[in-house]
Length: 361
Image (cartoon, rainbow, N blue to C red; front, side, top):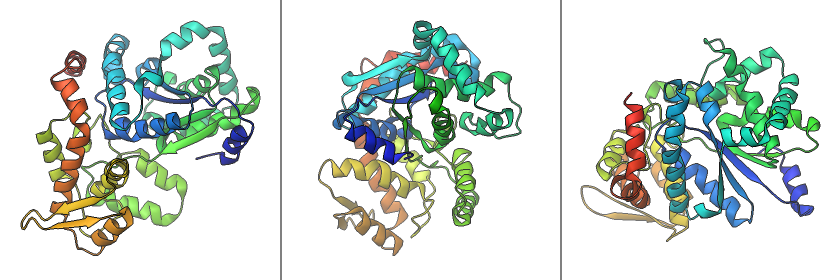
């Protein structure tokens, strides 16, 4: 989190807190977008904070998502909204208490005010600084880019101030945009709080990529580590093998996790451990608070009352990766069951089929 003192000040002043998180409309919703992001949103709800989800159709268009076809992006929006609603339910939140805001609707309503805000943010940025923020869009600095993509950050920051948001929430990969927002704050008369959640690792991580992560971590340079995590080692809907989607069948979940990179007795840069820490354990804490892992060969069970107990046991080589994978697959399949049923058998099927058609183009 950035500006913890500002959050404390808002709370002390009994200020009205308004949260937002924004998403591109770019494909199927995976565990990171669905469960991880929405669990933090549910936390804000429980704290009595207004929660808002911003569906960034124009940003998706600028960033060439879904083929850069604005009509397709908007046609995919109903799926995205429904997927996030089901994700919110899965983590104990209330989707009916979330305001879903489409970017084009905001711009239509705010018009000149939004344009002025984009200009205010743009005037505070140098061209070189704008280029350095391109990693937010998935581009590396120096790669071919359009002029429109240089507008991405000014637009994203203008979204925050146009909506009057004072709690800006995103993944760690969006930190650069929030820093720009803080630097632009004087022009808007208030400063937002920036909250960042963890980025789930790609389950198709390789040993080479793990080595890259560990080297960046050992360097102690935040920028180097963030660049590695922002690039090719996070779970991504554009790389299906790297992700578990919230409507994947049980068989698909088991297959993906079965193939996942999971170094034995290693906790750092281990995607399956990542799933335990950020998806399974928070769910268990809301229920029975135990991790119970069975040996797939003997059926013998090992029970852990805390995450720390489990991690110590895995690090000591007392849990085999195959046993861990079987446990994680069971738990995630269970968590996703309502969303899976909704999209594969229920009313959500039409939304998923619509997105399927768009993605096949």
